Image (cartoon, rainbow, N blue to C red; front, side):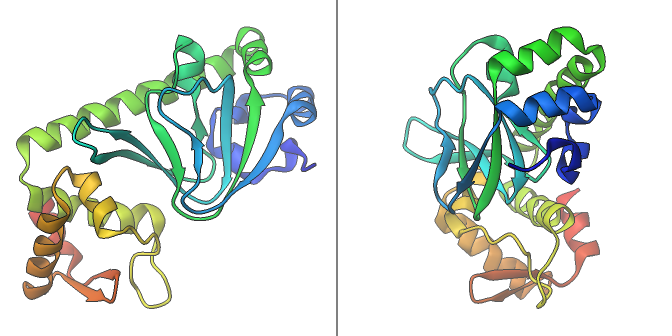
Length: 226
């Protein structure tokens, strides 16, 4: 069992406020999982009974719409926590979390987290700040859907993917989303997403290397997004 106090990724989440003794207690009760690409960590409507700390890999938080489309709400990186809002509100998960690449996650039971929550003020404040940050992101996403056209949203999403998940050895976006997933992030049909990617390529803003996307002119792409 890995030692929580030696885990680097906890420094990027609310868990950084926990004391050494609290981290030792957490290490005793946590469960570590390997999640394969495409597998769910939890699904919409599921009662999670705790939180998940992402140690390695990336997952998508998404909601299934009434027409069967998968709307991606957020991408979650190593160091982030999953399930905080559902745990505090005592509601089933509002979103599904699905691995976009092979992942390592640690599950911490609700009983243990709530004990930290009541005994460690800094930890509880960190959790609330994170939830507030998620609400702000949701507000920004809603405004973008209402005020920007699909091409502008696509440009902004490509910049977000490069700046938050880096590039591979070819200079293409490291996190490879399918065209369907990319369409789900910007709120459009897959066919429209494919057509807009071709337009951006013709305009010299990106290059398409098979299924990979490489940003060529980031400044022009950013101006389009803004």
